[in-house]
Image 1 (cartoon, one colour):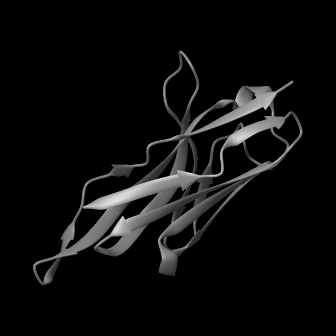
Image 2: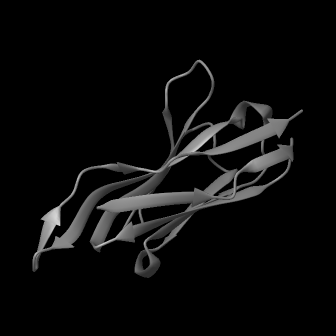
Image 3: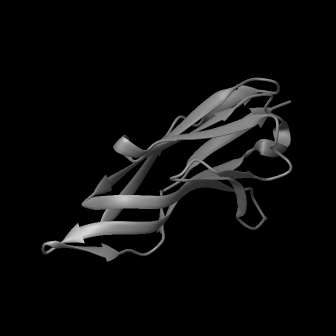
Length: 125
């Protein structure tokens, strides 16, 4: 079993910064992709940023130049540095892990996609 735990959300004024963290725990062999998604009230969940284990990244157009994703593969942890926050960034932010290999019974097995419980980010104008 793999568990993702997020931290770092909160309330900030427009133009401010926050840093989100997400740590994956369990009998993990490796995680191919870790990333962040967000869901605002009344809207669908959308991709914010992802990062492959090799370092390649993908960002939503709306956050390019303001948000930076990074990860520590040895700690199975992903970060999201959010600068220049805008009220439209207000949402619940979810951590995601995909392409997981977990260890069980002496072997490595491909896991499902995993989600964290979400952390609220609120940006006031």
